[in-house]
Image (cartoon, rainbow, N blue to C red):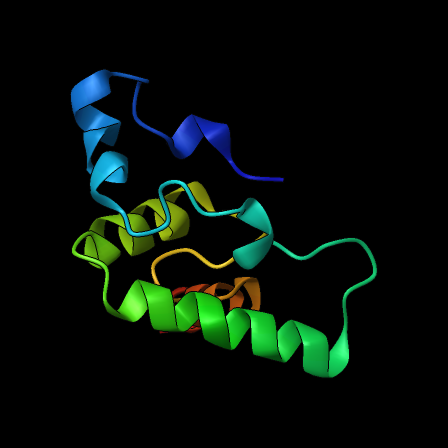
Length: 94
């Protein structure tokens, strides 16, 4: 579960960057796993999502949000949940 205490107050200017994301208007299933998705299907979906993120003008804001909020699911800022867990683990250890 995300740590909501880490999130800034829900002010429009804090989250306005989301309107510039390439993900706007796309199906959430591009970035979030459907039930029981595993293996090659999950890997291919995550690769597609990361390719979209790689071209996104707000990738840095999205990634920073996901890391600070400890988003537990989906691809955010070009990072999967596993990528974020690994990054955060390295930050905690380092």
